[in-house]
Image (tube, rainbow, N blue to C red):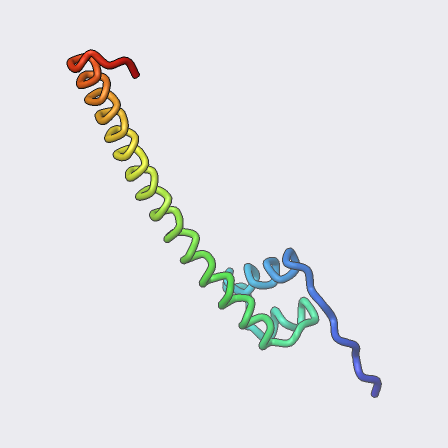
Length: 95
């Protein structure tokens, strides 16, 4: 029996296998046989996709918080500029 050489799989292939496993249409062993990969790979890729999905939702929330902070800082900058202009006029300085 000849030993099979080590294969590398594209990210698209890994995603396809992981989503097939996440869909619940068959056991890990059945999906591994269908895609001709080891069941441990199917499990690992499935776990990785699930973890990344959770992380993407965290990032979405983080981005929303960042946008709120940026909006508040821009308002603060505008307020400071207004106060600076007012004080410069009151003191007779040109900026």
